[in-house]
Structures are given as structure tokens and as C-alpha cells.
Length: 193
Image 1 (cartoon, one colour):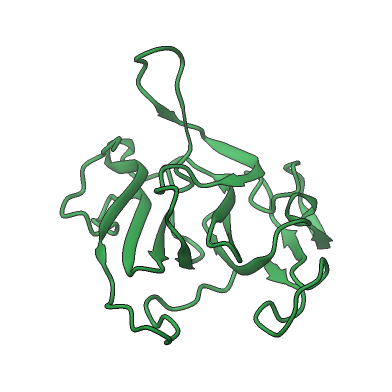
Image 2 (cartoon, helix red, strand yellow):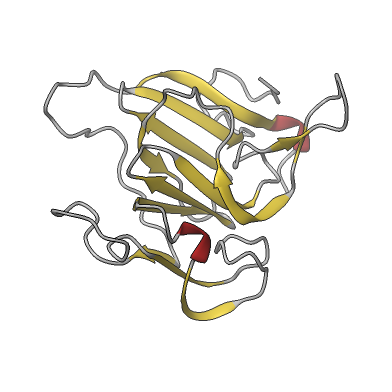
């Protein structure tokens, strides 16, 4: 297991990835296809209805990474009910984590958070130090992004305990394991901001 002292437990802005060009689709980070998760239908074509963007997931689920609100293995694709009313455009999956990018540019996530890759913390009282929640089977929004931030790309791959997010303005945000400096923040130290 990575050194617990080298994880960033909140989202950090690490800088612009590209200069946005009006009217052109972002070519920032490469798409991250989610292993074991998929969207039904073409989320980019024409009009949307409730079934256009349903998300189905299957496979290992020890940390709740499938978003089924339980942690049992799922042998066949099953609808992720908590995403039923969301228009999910992209799915990314890391080491026991899943990320869902919505049409509104918000990121929902579930699964392992031991390295802070879901950007979820808990506090136990006024002034208490925040601690990362180990894992979550419920699909919830990522914390720590500016309210006006619109994410256009989520990049995370199998085996990774970190995630990179690209905003519509070209800013890159990162959270999770930073043992080898993979967050690009100039160090390998743990940070709570």
C-alpha cells in the first residue's frame, strides 16, 4: 500500500491544460473508458430522453465502486439506479472507483477513497481535522470543486488511485494518491487543501 502520508485528500487546481478555442471541442485529456461500466445509447446525439444515458455496471464491487448501494459482486450488467435521473455523458473507472460526468459538467463518484481520490472527507466537530472517508457505495458529487466549475473530461484508469478533471475553461484539477507526484502539484507531500 502507498505511504499514507503522501495522499492529497482534496481537489487541487494544478493549472491550465490547454487554451480553449471558441466553438471547438476540447482535446485536452484522453477519454477514460470505464472498465466494467458503460452508458446506454449515444449521449452526444440529438435529443435526450430518460433512457438515453442509463448507466449499467458489473464486476467486482468490494468498495462500492459500481454504485449499486451495496458491496456485493455483480455478475451481469445492472442499472445504477441512483444515476437514473442523471444524464451521464462519460464514465471513468480507477482502482475500485467510478466517476460519472453529467451533461451539466458535474462529477459524481463512488468506491474506494483511501487515497482521497473521491475528494470526500468527514469532520468530527468544530475545528476538527478532516479525514478521508475510506469508501462509499453511494453515488455522490465530488466535493471541493468551485460551484461554477463545469468539468468536460474525467481521466482515471484501472490501477490508478488518483483522478484528473479538465474544466471547460482549461483548468486541470487533481485529487488522490500523490506518492510519485502524479497529481502534478510539485511535490509528493500529503495536503488537506
